[in-house]
Length: 160
Image (tube, rainbow, N blue to C red):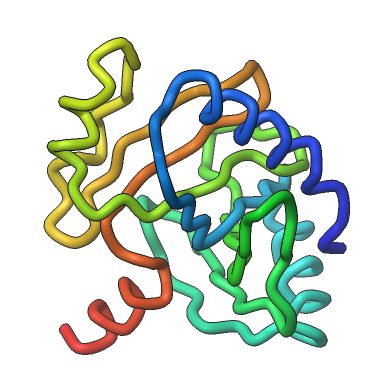
C-alpha cells in the first residue's frame, strides 16, 4: 500500500526548493485519502498488519488514523515516519490517492514573515495545539507546516 508517494514528494520538494527557504526539512507525515468509508476501514485494517496504529480519532466529524511506519520512508533527503489516513468527510468527495505532506516548522510567524510572496492558507492557524499553515503546490497536492511532530501532538492530546 505504501507505494506511489514519489510523485507527491517530488512535487512538494520541487515547489519548496523553488519558493521556500528552509535549511532543514522535517516531514513528519504524508496523507493518503480514500473515497468511501468502506475503503477507509479496509485500508486501515491492511495498514495495521504492518504499521503501528498510533491513534484513530474523530476530527471535524470523521475518523483519522495515524500510523507509524515500521521503517521510515527515506526519499530525496527526507525521512517520513508516519502516514495519515482520513475517512472521507460527509458530503465531500476526495479522489483516492496521496494528498499532502506535512512539515515541522518551529516558528510559524517568522516563517510567514520570511515568505511574504507565498499565499498561505491560514484557516488552521487558530488551533490551540499545533497551528498550521497550508499551501497548494499543484492541482493534486498541498503541503502543510506546523510546529509539532504528529507523534508529539498525539502524545499531548492523550494527556488532555
